[in-house]
Image (cartoon, rainbow, N blue to C red):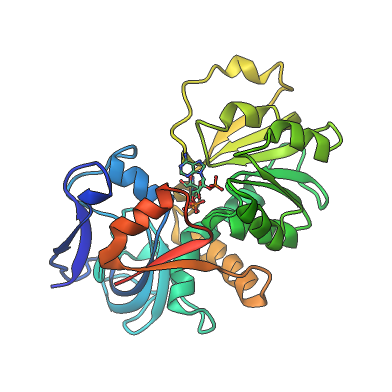
Length: 327
Ligand SMILES: NC(=O)c1ccc[n+]([C@@H]2O[C@H](COP(=O)([O-])OP(=O)(O)OC[C@H]3O[C@@H](n4cnc5c(N)ncnc54)[C@H](OP(=O)(O)O)[C@@H]3O)[C@@H](O)[C@H]2O)c1
């Protein structure tokens, strides 16, 4: 029987248990995939703790790469033997093999290895939709400033490089001088160590007092309010995560005096709701990776059985770039 990592109760990393799980045959619209690598994402922490509650017992993991072993009725775009990768809801990639909906899975180009694929699908598709689709009403042009928090993380380092390729001036924040250096080396035009510096003041200095057109904020509770003060009039606050905790209840009235701001809360799973949208976004991601414009940094690798340590390191802000788990 394949092994997988499950939680039977919400809580800390100690709740992650290695178990044997039966894997049946794929039904209509499903595939059976054997994983070569799985991606670690901050959403796995939210699901483990119950901040995003799922039905228990829950096999975690939203990102993986491997070989398709069987396809169910009606699946046309994949065949047994295909190399494939995905970012998907429902979770379940922390496993040696699983049955899952085929619509979120795409064939992997030969030039992209399994570890790289597992490190980039969820994070890269997120950077893609944020920078290409989650845009302010006044648009984004080359030379425009955007602010991206946690710029040395998994999504962050991909976003730094993709923003550079789009000609945007990405101001990245990160929690140490070394992380700031990493963001700069990957295309951020400016980096702010927000553990020591006031990022609002620095953003105002960098932008000549004007502010940025968009803030991409995945840190949540600790940065939300101040992020609004970094925006120029009609700017867009794109909240997409809660690494420091969820944003407390917020009165929309505050957006007016700050410059008629726009606020959105985004999730990748709206963007990849259909097979067609997923394929189109993945094609763009594969193109920037194959061209070398975006390089996928895997700074941490763990055996799947050591996933508790991986979660501890992620939550302790010890990781940079992407992390993969090897079944
Ligand atoms: N909505 C979506 O569609 C979507 C999709 C993918 C990811 N996300 C979100 O994007 C963020 C990045 O995801 P990721 O998987 O690539 O993780 P990551 O950025 O590699 O790790 C999270 C980073 O957040 C920063 N952080 C700030 N305050 C923190 C705190 N109190 N505790 C822990 N970390 C803190 C840390 O960087 P510093 O030390 O530099 O501050 C940490 O390294 C997460 O919030 C995730 O939920 C959202």
